[in-house]
View 1 (spheres, helix red, strand yellow):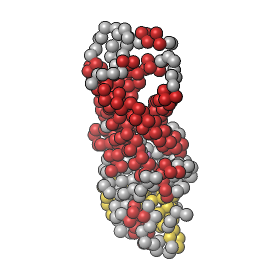
View 2 (cartoon, helix red, strand yellow):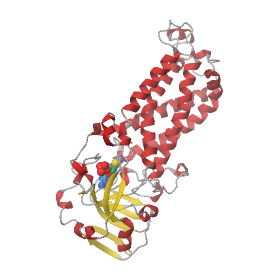
View 3 (tube, protein in one colour):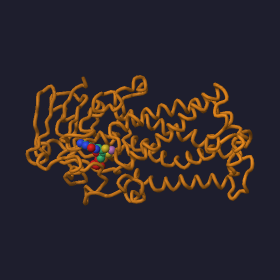
View 4 (cartoon, helix red, strand yellow):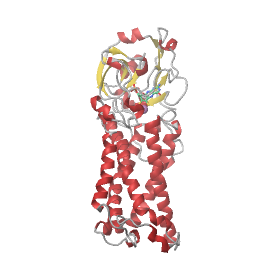
Length: 401
Ligand SMILES: Nc1nc2c(c(=O)[nH]1)N[C@H]1C(S)=C(S)[C@@H](COP(=O)(O)O)O[C@H]1N2
Ligand SMILES: [Mo]
């Protein structure tokens, strides 16, 4: 299409004001997704190496990593809730913004100068990376890790491409955005021969807002848990409530799905404990004889949903460390599960030291169900769900090598 055919696009809504209003929302919203995403990445303690680290080639892109705290215990629930729900909410805004500038895709000549080429190149990266992040993110929340290990990798590197392109785009366009909010400049965005309007510009913005609100309404319940969870139509697995009574809250991976056989979790099961004091093997009955502690903590999945607070009972990780002859230190957790991601993970010393960190044996007054990790699972405050290992087989106290 050449320049003269700009007249093909006739919507009177297109123009600097509409594009700038949407741009302003994205200028605030997308960086929030970026930052909460980096926090989620940090929450995995990826610097502890194998098992925690899904992006071994990150190099300097890991510069911001820090020991993820255990308090406040609701922090990950909030940051990841914002990340996932915010991602859904911004989808209509991204689509509307792309629609508002869509005719510009066909501008002629496509490249006028070196600066123009750089500008369009960065835009291509920005649009591509934004759509890529939204699509991979949505697929991950809906389809239960469509690309297991590689999701972290592609979503993480995609985020950095997005961020670099955003910086260039903002540097080039901030002035236009300012003028656009006053409905000035940006003539190239307007239809040269607009059709009569059927809806006001404000009406159109309200429509986009209504789309975002709808998405908010059908996703937010997954973070609060409880009765509101039923409103979370877009929560993973349709928000199914899995088990009976005390164990009746969200399950992500079932025991059957993870290949956990009843024979492995029966009376022959032993917790293998390894530390400077040597190796120990404890039956479930022996674990129940140790001092039991009770905590109220949620399981918060990277997919954005939370179980809400549940009452877990079990043995403190630091007591287990002491039993293995060690000061509370890093702890390597291995699951009975034989294959798949998240079967082994490092916990950091601050997590092991925290008195609320348990090897849980029961929940809400009942023994753990097999889907919630029977015979024993890890529960650590402010820990991403994937590190709340179920069907624990071995705990090793020490440092990653
Ligand atoms: N061994 C093992 N533990 C695991 C998983 C797993 O796949 N294998 N999934 C994790 C994930 S992704 C989450 S969100 C929580 C879910 O816990 P729940 O099903 O008890 O709510 O368990 C975690 N523990
Ligand atoms: Mo998860």
